[in-house]
Length: 202
Image 1 (cartoon, rainbow, N blue to C red):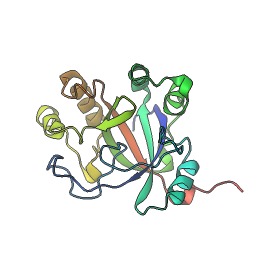
Image 2: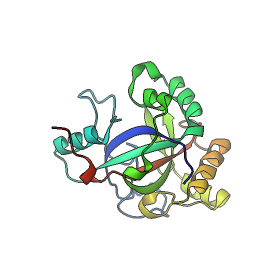
Image 3: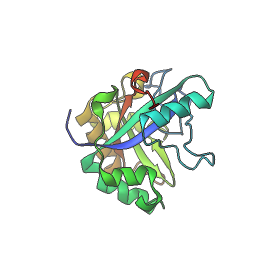
């Protein structure tokens, strides 16, 4: 794997079944996503404005306290080369580093611990007014990407090849097909954080 992934944070998310409006090329069940367009997310705060946890321990505690079955802790990282563009896009959407959480972590360029969990794959995502869209939630993009680049989702609805995912994200950005919701697409690396490592300090 190419070095240089930056920690975005951790999300507590459900797995999802494919909806009728999603591409038929996706698996029918067990879809993994960091986007609340397709999965339910637990929030960091009671107001629900932030759903990015700073550590796997915090995410696991939230997962246990949520009292809902089927929640998983996902680690999310972005390639360091994509961070400047992502930070600019997030700031344009009204969320800058002074607000803390995700943009502050990206600006710190904390190394994403790729070895701390099982790599699930890459999801094409883009920021829009406080939320993250996935390529699987905007109709037809999965098929468009496949026709143009040959890249398609595999297990869990994620792209398994890193270079293919980055190529597909660049093509989606250049194509403008996410307009008006997403203008900049990035390949987010998702890992399944093992529960055995999530021991809180006494």
